[in-house]
Image (tube, rainbow, N blue to C red; front, side, top):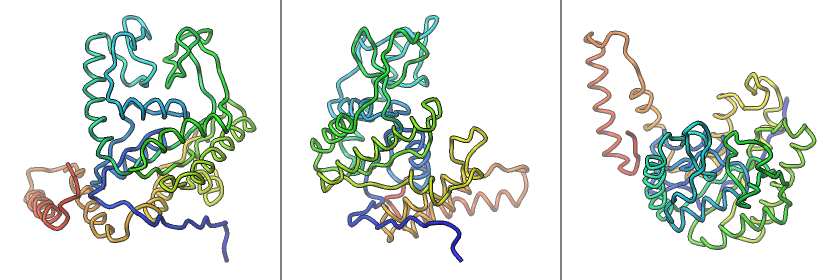
Length: 313
């Protein structure tokens, strides 16, 4: 007997291998899947500006990564009592010094620009069609940084506008492969109906992009969560975020969809070694732990020899 509807996902014709560089951009879901991918030794960079939610902010970030144009004092805003950031970054980048902020974000930008230029794959996770536009500058912001609400106008991106933002980045980079997905996280502040409208607009926009461009693909993370995992036991206590188990389940589907099957032995070896590297001994002075350390060194050497493209720190 079958107790749920299974999402049939046809694997990509061109798939990811360890030699490829990947860039994950977008919502918390991009963070979670990107971290798993990076933990398995793929050459992956995850959200260099922090979490992004809407198509406009993602398009702005890709433009910045493409140009490598440094941030200046004109980009800096005061976000708290002697705290600074930019509308392009999330709150994790707050700094008490403008100079230190610019040094940090431009160093990160330089590294991310180089990675972007070498990346073959961009995995983009879209969260919402709603955006906040800063009234004074007219900029659609990635984060409001808890500034007063009267400084912003809230707007809904139509299917056409979202499609324009996303098609722009795909069209400018025919050498790259794009995997789009819609985050399964619901935005309950918009109400259940508002959240569904937001997701629907994103789904329609991505469908249009994938119809237009051969290098744009869709992975149904939203559908897997809403259908295959249609049970609140797969949500955390906030009833919004997927549990770790749900994320792992969707990741397994993503791996089957996007990663070359020939890389499975390397992924298994990387996962085994990662578990050993993260092991925290209770009694490091014992002979058993010394043997464990020797085994870890042997496994590390074997991985480097057998799978030189795997990057495990």
